[in-house]
Length: 498
Image 1 (spheres, rainbow, N blue to C red):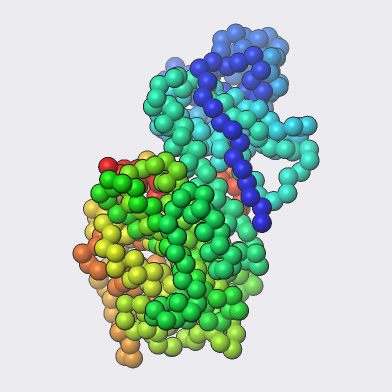
Image 2: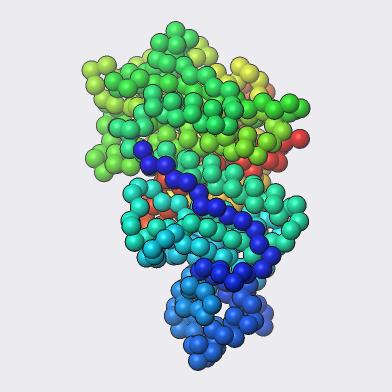
């Protein structure tokens, strides 16, 4: 398996004499477009070299103030200059994250004899902008797979204009921990299913626990069957690679809030007996992104030393067709004793989540959030760049939405309407696992809600669209696994820590 190591990143007050490739910004103001972060002397020298106005030259080469539009120019006294659009001068952290990401992604693909040194000068003095710039740079440097000899990527990052205040260092530390967690998810999601399956995924979680001094517990197939995890055992029954349930625990002294995170970990989803199409199956190594996200988020929270108790539950299985596979119409007995009529074997994620939700609820956490690449219906509703959020109450939904806004991730709240309930009625069991094809994301959420007691606040994140990018890379988002939801989970933990 490939494993990506983030480049070194540091804060600086000025541009040094050997900046490597320099990144500056182009922003729009009410008085016209301006360069941001480029010293007057450097801008003047560059204008002299080009024989004209530097902004005009940037635009002639295709640059603009459009956010994340980056162009490359030669620059006296540096290897090269990248000018990237910031949008309006009153920038948000996400604008900076995207702009820096676009610039670094451009640089990482340039031929070189050694990894690139990059100096980012965008006048990012506020902690939120420091965090955004650092995350954009680190996440855009990511690559999965063998490195081409002539394109060695990013070796060193320097962020200029942050000052020496403790808040700047704290923002950078938060960015590094967050990017480390996101990159871990990307590596896991991008690993093919013949290498990452429930047993090896569980072992990877053990290794993560050892690195960050987390508590860890793993249920194998025998323990799952003995303790009555009917959903996990049914979904994993068709595969020679048996299911696992992994629990990672972070419990620092003095923590007064307990956050439980539950993730869907289907390491490959063929659809089971309700087989997917060949085209629909190709990217299904990504169906464990929810489990990867909750595991990595706990590690990131521990890396920061946040004073909050966090428990991650990763329900891992491989959904395959065989003579031992579960069938549509089977009746399953879940961990909480509820019986479920299985309506479709390609709706397996909600079954493994239901068991894990019931198990984690026994610890009476203060908040439960589950994360899953759950439904194509959510993608139909919201597209591939926005994730769905469903909760039983708006207060819980607002907590997650506030964290997502702070993190720069796109979520949209969807309802769990009362008229969904009849779709889950069964004549032969306590409930069905699904209904008709209308409002499938809402039906799935309504089903999951049955496995978390009413008194426990709960939210469901359906990340089916943005968890995996099968289009071209853009700004800080690569092709393949994106790590979407990790930033939101870590921001939420940061907000709830005491």
